[in-house]
Image 1 (cartoon, rainbow, N blue to C red):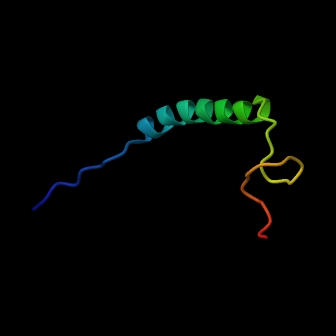
Image 2: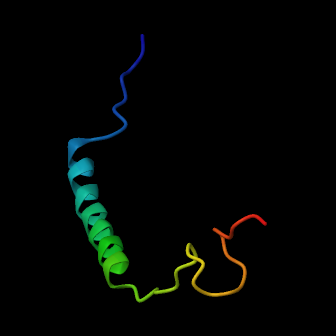
Image 3: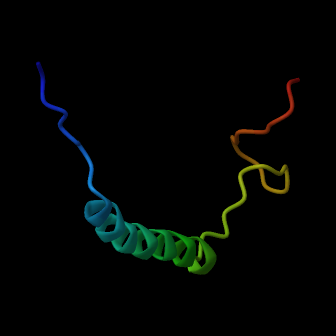
Length: 55
């Protein structure tokens, strides 16, 4: 009646694993070595921020 069509193949899954791991390592390294020292969650400096107390 009908033909079974396989969408994914095991070869394709193993080939996609390598770029996925490279991207994961790149995101982790960017997160570890990014020099963003701005902290918007404390009240140590005047000005607007996300965690300002309600007066």
